[in-house]
Amino acid sequence: MESVQDLRRRIHSVRNTRKITRAMELVAAAKLRRAELRIKALRPYAETMNELIAGVGRASSSLRLPLLERRDEVQAVAIVPLTGDRGLAGAFNAQIMRRAFAVERALQAEGKAVRWVAVGKKGRSTLTFRRRELAGAYLGFTDRPAYEDAQAIAHRAAELFTAGEVDRVTLVYNTFISALTQRVTEQDVLPISADILETDEEERAADVLRGDFIFEPEPEQIMERLLPVYLETQVYRALLESTASEQGARMTAMRNATKNAGELIDTLTLHMNRARQAEITQEILEVVAGAEALT
Image (cartoon, rainbow, N blue to C red; front, side):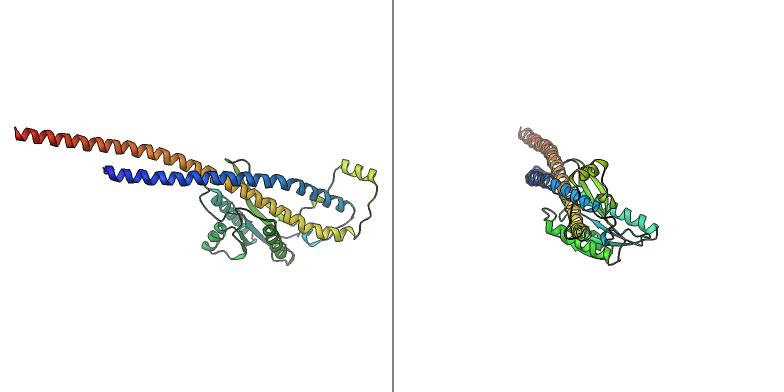
């Protein structure tokens, strides 16, 4: 049995750990609120971008742009897992990499080659440990991603796609549902789906009422400028979703750690009280035995 002094030291250590986990929980909660606000702020921009692309697409009978090119035979696919730069977030990073490797195995079973673009230190370290060759790595911003970070990732993905090194680009990330729930999502971002150019009957009727538009420059040139921005927006939205998911997972993990630390303190305190009681009982027995020896 541990001594009272050893148990007291353990209790002190666990209390210090509980203070740290509690502080990390509060920090993660504050970052989660900011991430949710950023996601909400992005939605109007993304919706307007979709409407603008659809409007320009209606003005052109045929668009042959590199980012819209859907190749008949897919020979290589780029997988872009969006992980965090830090741990202590439960299974957040592990479930992303688990899904990414599952996608890799499925593609290789079909005879397709796989290229990797790592986002986040955790993803990069896992890929390098497993001896995967990286076509790019982007680190140090997952706590608060900026639009410039999404631009860099989107530019590299578009570069691989237009150069013919890959025929498809897939993001693997956690979609934020709530602080307790995150859903692993696979999203093909290249080639850009032609569905964004399609419109429903109500929009076509509205166009007839508004009349024809005169585009300057030509619709194809406008679309050539808009599609890279659309790709950047999709990557940026995924980064924000991943950030919110990471903070939610970390907040939940730290809350559970704080709760477990409290339960451990209670258990250790009980053991310490029992050990102290045993020491007191032993001392009383020694005093009684000494008194009887003197009589």
